[in-house]
Image 1 (cartoon, rainbow, N blue to C red):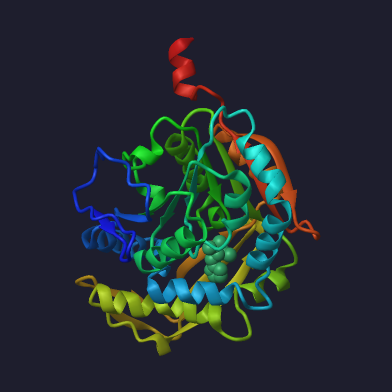
Image 2 (cartoon, rainbow, N blue to C red):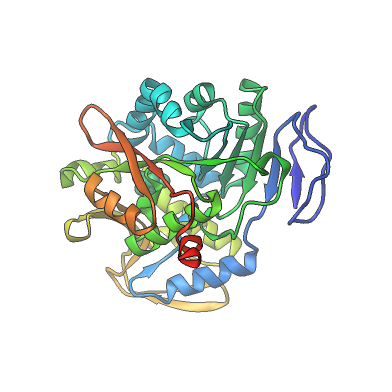
Length: 359
Ligand code: AVI
């Protein structure tokens, strides 16, 4: 469904997806809503709670409240990722944009995955000047105002918001802004780390498919460092990270008829060195039964409900994973302490399957 954004420039579109537009809508931001149905969410939650250890999809953390809490995590002194990546982008966007656009032949469309508040892309928009900017994010409440504000700041660049689970859409919706132009992807924030490495490889291959042959991807990746610093970053003194995890229980209670008692759980963030990841969990304080999605679930004292993993990759480990998904490296920018990187990746002109067919 195409949901026109409110405001004087919003196009009056309302039609089913997939959509073929006859007239390009170039005068204001649009929002395309491809959110998974509640039935899918229920199925995913039941699947996740049936795993051992129990684990829920990380994107479930990002309802309106969760998205706001995540923004506040980015402001905590212990969580440097957002600040350092934003600074790196502000300082080096000119070089990044030049490398992103080099040799493409025409102005590309810039596609941001998991776009959130759209605060990181500004310097790239100014230097790359893409033919259009497409923002994909799971939270409609967050995406709509962010697209509107961005469109006001960059009136010459058409902005399209697509509300979706970007890991699970088959293609970008047909739209004149996306037709016949090279695509470059932007995936900041090290969100790849919230997928396990097998899923992460699949996601990188999926981005290659969504962006097409010859595309580029600028991707932010957080790197391993001392356990104590990482654990503090994911369990800040102000309790914002904990509130972010507990918000998941409130969401489940509200949307899937649950009766979680948040006081019966405690939040924990633990560095698992062997897997190079932080495991974030709500740990049951006692043996208890919880009703959710029409079923009863038992939790033993000390049993974790994993809310999220955050895998940290060295540059070498990340590039090996990216190569397995068909991406090659064009370069990397890092912060002063070399704790996070923005990697520039490229797809060959022909996809592997096309090349195989030709051989
Ligand atoms: C979105 N993502 C990269 C964050 C991270 O650092 O893994 C999510 C997060 N969860 C708690 N704090 C941050």
